[in-house]
Length: 289
Image (cartoon, rainbow, N blue to C red; front, side, top):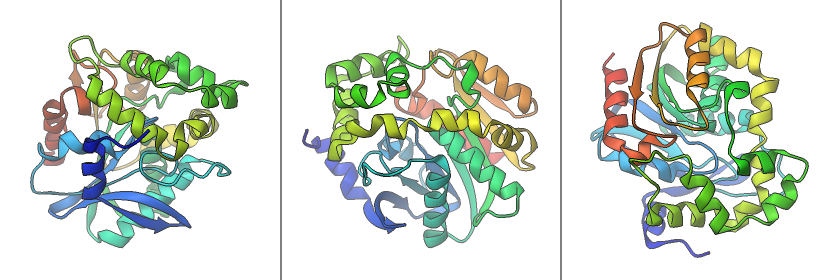
């Protein structure tokens, strides 16, 4: 499927950079610090953040498509891990910024963020991470409610499910995680599907979804980062999210009860698309704090 004109315009705002032998799509904006490091979720890309940018004028921003997603390379023989995605984040920040960094992380990106936090606690992080905001990510994987599509990709028939992926099934699954008051639009669905299918990315869904297993494997490390990271950590949450449910949020808050929370009562899994102005206000509040 060809890229839509809207996605082409987003592509032109960024650039492809070589990182560890792969080409990564990177969006950068100069501005005041701290740098906003935007970490996207599964199965989407940095395109998710485009509506947020105008709501946070003057801020330095770095967003990239994780390897296997969006406009970045999608090698079929690659072992996709969140540790490697965190490596890419470190490399890109090191290239383009030498000051303080504040992350904003969604869905899969929340676990990339917790790996960065764990590295910071270990004294191994190659950036000056000063704070962050996590929202609508199933960091407590056992409390989450994955979609049917995610379950199929995770299961023994994952490779077959990936090969049989269709736009119709994607639209039904993706649309189901938006809130009733802020439904998935036809244009958004078209854009997201063309980004997934760029370089036949739908064929590797069973590989890129490995992050769910890693959340179980590295639970002790990443839970420890949530509870013990000594810097400012904030939460925002679309409370109608059927995947990263209130049970997930409750688990995160149990680990980090002092973290300020901005509840987004009528939003679903994608607040940055459903109501970008409200999420931007939560980000600005966290930055001001």
